Image (cartoon, rainbow, N blue to C red):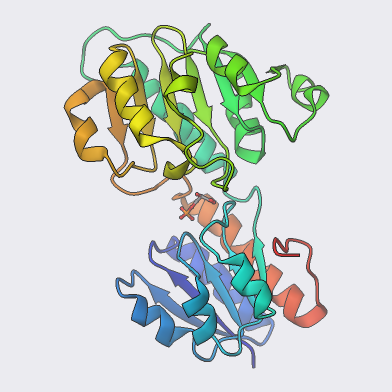
Length: 306
Ligand code: 3PG
């Protein structure tokens, strides 16, 4: 009987765990749960005899892969898979997958919620501003970026997007203005919503030079990854641009130096973009189904280490 471990330092909603259990039980698999673990050793012990692994932002590095002697597949229930050592997984013959699109709506809603929160001075009772008629730049037009654009248009925002991997015709079909460079996006837009993955190329790429192109009343919203923002540049923006605001779901390492900016800075205490019952259920079900489809039929549809 194949054994699947759900290892989530930040647990899924109970309903999502039940759905995963139902799918695995139906397939004749065994489910093991490791939630809210604080020690890496607990994860290393729990993977010893598993065939499949479902994770969220949990780190699957070479030591985890080494400890998981029977592991065949790891599924990141979510979009970004920068927490999996893909080279080590490939070397061990372990298939890695994500579940693209399954938690996108939750993240998109949070991005818009953060824009409103900042526009209204973090609900401090003073006169704020509205999103209507403001310019919004979507940095990367994937599953989340596309949804942010759709919701923002409902608020009456003027929406622009930049994505080197998505054709302008695709973007413009959604009534969004496609721009040719990130510099153009940042120059045009008062609000920027980040949706780029953390890769060797993007890490630290949102720097002072780019941010300082933003017009007056600049608001940067980051529901993507903390690593994409250059923290020296971020601190310089706060110091030099008294209008600049930053709202993030992925707190930077320099948070302690930014809390002084009060209504201009906001970070969630823990990443919560995808932390809704709906997103957990969608991503959890997809992850369990993908594991069963791979182990039973060799289906590699969502493999990211091909
Ligand atoms: C993702 O990449 O899917 C999001 O960042 C969600 O991450 P989480 O599952 O840790 O909430």
